[in-house]
Amino acid sequence: MKLLTLTALASSASASYFSLLAVRSASPMHYGTINANESGIWIGKDAGSYCPPSFAEQNITCPNTGRTVFSSSGVANGSLALGVSVPGAQQVYIDPAYGIVSFTQPHSAQMPEGSILEGWTFSNGSSFGTLSWSNGILFCSLSGNDSSVGPWQMYAALPQLHFGPACLGASLIASNESGPGAWEYL
Ligand SMILES: *[C@@H]1O[C@H](CO)[C@@H](O)[C@H](O)[C@H]1NC(C)=O
Ligand SMILES: *[C@@H]1O[C@H](CO)[C@@H](O)[C@H](O)[C@H]1NC(C)=O
Ligand SMILES: *[C@@H]1O[C@H](CO)[C@@H](O)[C@H](O)[C@H]1NC(C)=O
Ligand SMILES: *[C@@H]1O[C@H](CO)[C@@H](O)[C@H](O)[C@H]1NC(C)=O
Ligand SMILES: *[C@@H]1O[C@H](CO)[C@@H](O)[C@H](O)[C@H]1NC(C)=O
Ligand SMILES: *[C@@H]1O[C@H](CO)[C@@H](O)[C@H](O)[C@H]1NC(C)=O
Image 1: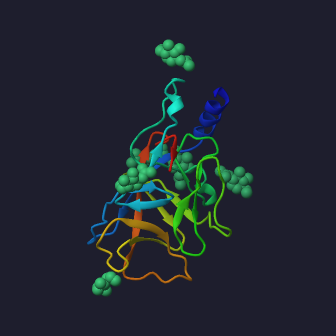
Image 2: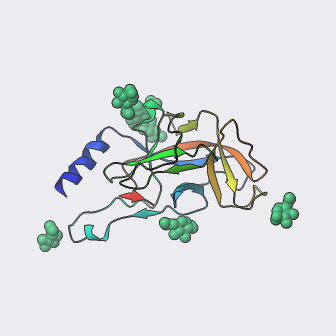
């Protein structure tokens, strides 16, 4: 356990952390909080985080912000990760067939073949930062055809895909966070 804790500290030393809001005026998703939930990234769902119950008796405290925190440790190379303490981190990836923005499960690098890891750009601003993906980000309603009905799931606008009336493009603004938001996200 000591080793795990040291690894977690080492991996967070060079990272900076942020949480995200969507900007899409004249839509109910405007200023919606963006959360990781059950392998997708959403507006209108709670952050799905997990702290191993055995940690309590070992006196280990998990970060527990209730928000989804992202890490910019890889953005110099165009990649994005969740802001977690779990060793091995959790990588954000884009499904190459559907454009769904997803993330790896703890202790696993598993993702669909051909998944896209790159294309993310982060910039620090004086009042907030921005995160973007090379060809744009969309949020799609589960309703199938009505973009005014939440929750909305995050997609990358892969050029070969057509996104219907359930989807709206949005910008992403970032607020600084002081560290990881959870031990891990589910
Ligand atoms: C995902 O979000 C739903 C709706 O907010 C919530 O009920 C559920 O508990 C969340 N999943 C996890 C793993 O927390
Ligand atoms: C956890 O903290 C309690 C209270 O300080 C202490 O009695 C106990 O020995 C600690 N357990 C471990 C595994 O360090
Ligand atoms: C970025 O990519 C370069 C070249 O592949 C690699 O040496 C470096 O470790 C990477 N940096 C990060 C933060 O992933
Ligand atoms: C944003 O600020 C962090 C922390 O100082 C730094 O690590 C990162 O390189 C900056 N990013 C950009 C794009 O300037
Ligand atoms: C966020 O952190 C970066 C790096 O430390 C800094 O440059 C930027 O001004 C901060 N932004 C806000 C709004 O505090
Ligand atoms: C949306 O889909 C539902 C269910 O298929 C259908 O009943 C409804 O007419 C559709 N609405 C529009 C505006 O296309």
